[in-house]
Length: 370
Image (cartoon, rainbow, N blue to C red; front, side, top):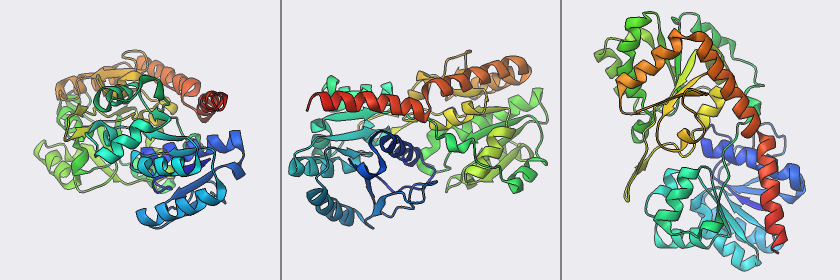
């Protein structure tokens, strides 16, 4: 099996998805049967020999993929991003093998160039990380229903086993309690994540819990705007911009927080799209037994059950977000119950083992049709 992937070794959702996917494949097929080809890879964390071949550029990966495929003759090509679908289609034609494409979110929610759309529509399987994205694929791009299967993200369990960063732990000692946490890039193109909505909800929360602190993990060009907004709202002393954190820092943040909040908006339009294709950070928070506050529309609402393992809110309504936070903080036993339900959901449906089982079914179905 040949896997065409974006750069690995990062903390983004697609990178984590691919890394766990590759491990699941190697568990089933054996390490020698899975080759990963990616531009400028850092390798797969935790593996001494990731088996990932760096090609250095888009042209480089195309040339190397062609040469490697003609020599190795893969039985299946997996494109973990739609950007590789045209190359996957070409390799499939040259090698006489099927190709699969992973579909995550905004990269397939918008109108696609004809050549990329054709590659997506001719894929033998399209693995959608959510039912929401599957619906968009069927409606917007006219894919055959039988070719599109929901293959959700799962938790990378190594996160929970990572040793906490003591330097980050010491910074939390100066923060007030309770702690609200958001994890996500602070990019001007990703304002849909709702950091500003939580900031606008914070004065309402502080009226009931004057010592509350909002911890923002992530960095990017939108940070100055958010810092300015915190000043305008006069909540600067209650907002801690933790910056980018690796896994050891994330462990501290998830352990220390009282709840996780990400009121991400979802919008699908011909020329633009925004929203969480899945929302793996919710799984991460749930795995630490934390109650979550998420949007009442879009993909996260597929696994966040309102008042069962979290709370769903109007992502554009700061008052509703604030009220949800207050409900959880006012009822710590209930909040802990929601957090425990979320943890059990992750352990039941969103582990590497669960991915292996789903993958085994997919591969068996594919092999049965050969």
